[in-house]
Image 1 (cartoon, rainbow, N blue to C red):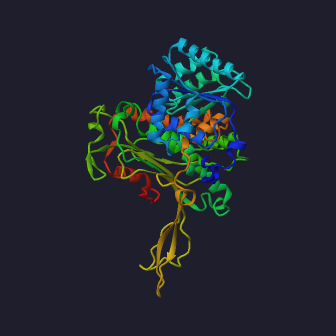
Image 2 (cartoon, rainbow, N blue to C red):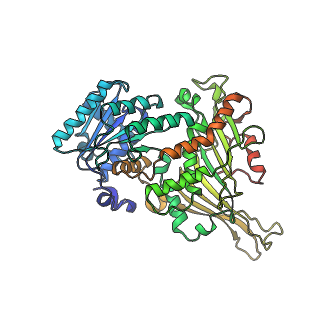
Image 3 (cartoon, rainbow, N blue to C red):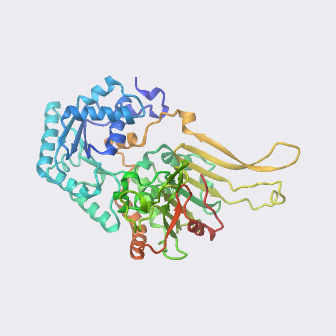
Length: 512
């Protein structure tokens, strides 16, 4: 039986959000993301009866793999990475319609074979199906894939109809403003905007989706959600791991491109945007773009708004670890940042004068992603005197990972005959209330793409606006080389230079 009985927030999806007959094609089918996230996502959607009755999965990659072997690899991925165990009967239904097409991403003949394969599926069914192309490859082949989809007639197939083709594109979407604009230009040649789903898996996380619910369904928050009551907002996306085997990729990316420009900015936009007029995808994305346009240009250099650093040797998990420049595949003279901290100013009525602090880094004290909203202290002096009163600013924090939930810091009286106070924390955890086996982000995102709901995906103008903010910073860093690049010990919360970003407003970084 499907797990909808154990997860009340899944009730009704199979009735009201059914996808039409669908063929999902995964480019990069032998890659790590496919094994860890995409195949398990498809399997769990099937387990919850959320896949269409006529559902077909096609892997596409350079490596020749027989259909049976691809099915075996997919089953192994489910056994290792799925949040639920492999149930043979459930997988058998999906596996029966799972196949593989081998070919180069720049090979038109391979895409013609793909088209013929999809045509054969339609002939077998006796009706048309929608094609969902998931591009899970290195960004260097995004453009060839899109161009070959267009040349083969796969992009425009049934365009404008209910069964139009769709494309999901993984991050990074461009390296800067110019490359993002070029990629959007290629997309527009073959796809309309409603056919395009630029993915950021953070938007599929439960707590991120809960941001809108908390802000706009609870009367106690929205009246306070402005410069009159909020003193600052901190967004932290910290990783405990180093670059590992991704050194070659990371040297070309860095923390700002890898985490700040996409994941962290999405958290910022949902936290700070104005109320949308409806839950319609375009209404929400309109407000996100308006918010990004209100962000003031960032100053670089001494006493600017940005700090960059890389990790030096240190201790993680009680074990010594090397510095970034000693990692495999890293240039010993690298100027790539593994940590970035940003102070943003939003020039609109709601947020004028409220600093937004963003930081992300590798080899930090622990893995955590959170949004912390700090409220202004009350103006009275009733509890301001004496050592008896330990007071903290009220802080509402959204824990994105690893322990999804909310917490609120309040000041409370310590039991006893004397009036003494101390800060206390109230916690809500998704795992406690709803159970620990909640759907993963990619399940929601794959389902939404199949049914054509773009709410949790990034629009073209949105990604370009984000790059407009950060491209000047990247250009300044490239020109400066190693100058201004700080360092921090592995296992710490970042460089001391990052404290200066907050000192102007008498703020300090939280230790989540």
